[in-house]
Picture (cartoon, rainbow, N blue to C red):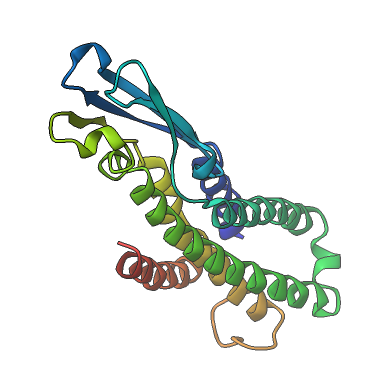
Length: 236
């Protein structure tokens, strides 16, 4: 039962940090002709990271004429899939909590409740793993696409040695990094809870101690450790 408390919290944290994200970067183009320069080119982007739709204008350093550019990439599929799984996991966790508290007798009737719950939880754990792994790769690509140094390569004026281009500041990605870190925690909790549910249905794992939150947390932490290392090494 202790995992049921934390699962909704991790789900909320995951989709809030990703789905509510907005970031910005700033560039500076110092033209040989100072009157054409622009030292504050702001580029804003946000979830769901359809960066190819994010446009901005930069000076060409050829009089007052400016060129319109766009960031590169569309990473909405992995981000939206990740957030969708988080939302549904949150809703299912809330529904399961209500059943555990108010309908405990019906839940354990003929052991069908724990078995169905076990299957659904395993499915969610798998979807968390797939969605979060995809988002980890997507986040890595978002970081590259929004790196000011990479964006400056798109500016034609920066290809001329007489002009000086610089990155004023980079986007803050700490909340997005957090969303990736949260996934092993939640996936581990889901998996540990799945094992407990299957044990409670007395089909397997019957040799493990019942109603032991410490055992549940140990299982969750072991799975979290393995999945966390996987993400770190694959998507640095």
